[in-house]
Amino acid sequence: MSPQATATSLYREAAQAGDIVRQQLAANGALLQSLGVRLRALLPRAVVTCARGSSDHAATFAKYLIETRLGVVTASAAPSVSSLYEASPQVRDMVLLAISQSGASPDLLAAAASARAAGSLVVALINAQSSPLARAADVAVPLLAGMERSVAATKSYIASIAAVIQLVATWAQDQQLLEELRGAPAALERAWQHDWGAALPRLVDADHLFVIARGLGLGVAQEAALKLKETCGLHAEALSAAELRHGPMALLRRGFPVLVFAQNDETLDSVTALAREIASRGADVMIAGANVPSTLSLPSESAPAVIQPMLLIQSFYRLANALALARGRDPDHPPHLRKVTETV
Image 1 (cartoon, rainbow, N blue to C red):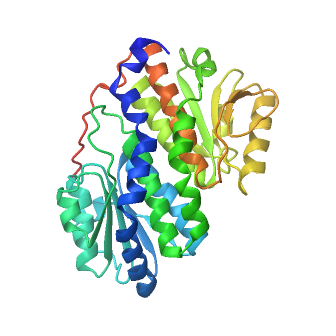
Image 2 (tube, one colour):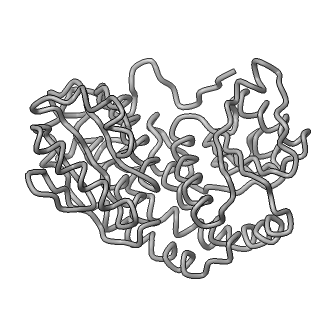
């Protein structure tokens, strides 16, 4: 690893993720236990997530985890419904789960205020504890990621995933899931050491890329695609492995790069089968989390399926940092972007 690569804020901040999750587990236990009691008493009809950017990718992960572990329908809100159209969806006896690093975006604040007025329980997973969103929520759960100087969110994204897992585990009274999460800090530190540098020659001159995952892994595929766009200037599209055959497969040609994330759960067979198929058609497939013939296997940390996606994105962040530099870009200061995006 070159001195230039380790000098970026993105590199230093992403490396902190394991310690941040360790702090979260210690600090938020009592708060989330209390919230779990409240949620079990409420029996919400549904969960509505509200987020933008990387936080919305954490919301994708939340959808899969809440629906598979709790059986509660979970859907993403369109914040513009409240902020621009001034409409008030009927969300009584539901939970609005808002996820944000800054807690300052007007459209998220409008959605939270509208939901609370309509009878929702508003829960915010929030990094800025003194933010307007934290004050507007019924329950504000601190992410404890600290300041991020890099425009690209890294440690705060992983903190959001960990907070979702801890929330769901306490709500469901799932002691096994809590125990799996307790192993995540050390696993994140090991995942950070995995070197995906073998992918660099395949991506340094690329113009387009598919990032493929399924289920619990889809949110980290979305996050990886966003990071490739903002830090590397690489047009990347995140897709569910279940959707590639519904049109996007037509774009594949010999040498087209495809990055695949696989976790060891019910989605594994379909994801690896797709990787084999597209590799046989000449696509340049790089896969993390599984071994598939005729593809580049990227080293990954073994873990329970719920924990594995955050470990894969942790290893990916190291690649994104190196790739941005190799493409002559500054990963900390992407063009036309700023840290706090105040969408109306």
